[in-house]
Length: 444
Image (cartoon, rainbow, N blue to C red; front, side):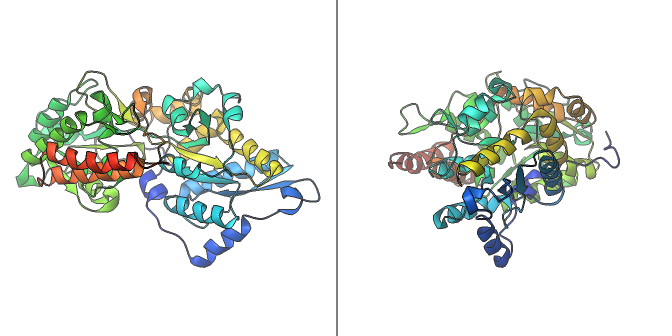
């Protein structure tokens, strides 16, 4: 498959949405001040127009795509003007920026917030409840994929609108499979088959690894293990809410990683961001890598002859993980809140969502978007993209829970200790449970 020349390519989402730092301090300060723009008369100017401040944190193609949509909205909604200033930081620093802005009282009307950060942000009374708008909007609530609904719902209320959607699947190098005379992976394959395949693909003489795994202990390390735990019947938090829900399932999932390490078939990336792991795959020295659709543009550019398969399974019932991010609306008075809600509701409707997904490297937020002809055409010409989309039917999301960061950190440390052979799966999980259970007992 080759990309059509002149067509905007989806971006490396992890690099552009998670891989940056704050911009110059002067820009940050200016953005904080601009959050109070048009405060006169509750945000309504003398001519009756309402100005909405949007902090999006996007760069390059994603930024251009969003700005084009904002310009269209401003042309067609003359009583509202969205100021897409960006916020002065990239998306990975938005939580800290918004937290400081809320404390100072100078916060935006809309901000791009990672789904895993929504629980922290939604504790503020300034976050607007979007339950009525989302559940009664132009796109039926049930038309949004289950992970989308789960990622924006907290305690039964919709606390944000969805912004970006992804899913995890296995991308594999067809040339390395042919060289090793191994059949390509198919839907329904098992983790035992994954282990066997990774071992057969590994070729120390050629510097080829069967697969890779982040070895930093961060969220990138952890979130790849959750589908394995869910597949085995476990959960992040137990039903009682006071302990982890993967005490047994986590041991078995970690045992799979321990076998990869024992077979020396896994490349362990010790640097944040998984950039080294992906470089090994792009150079033709890794047979399989679990990743999301954000990585496809780089794989295509590297001219890798690739395929995409769903994640393996223990039980025969595939499950994957999705990490949706959000447009969170803040209360700067009724006029600005209504205007901000109008904008995000307009932005996520199928016609605009399809354009944003194609240009910014996201999956469709709803089945309605997935049915649009422009998305179908884009999917048909991008090898493997349909596999990611179909995986959304079995996708789950991490819980919106205040203790999740501590649980994730504890499990990430367990993963690294097992990959490096420092602890057995049982020892690593016990240490993880001690830390995570203590975090769950803290009143929130």
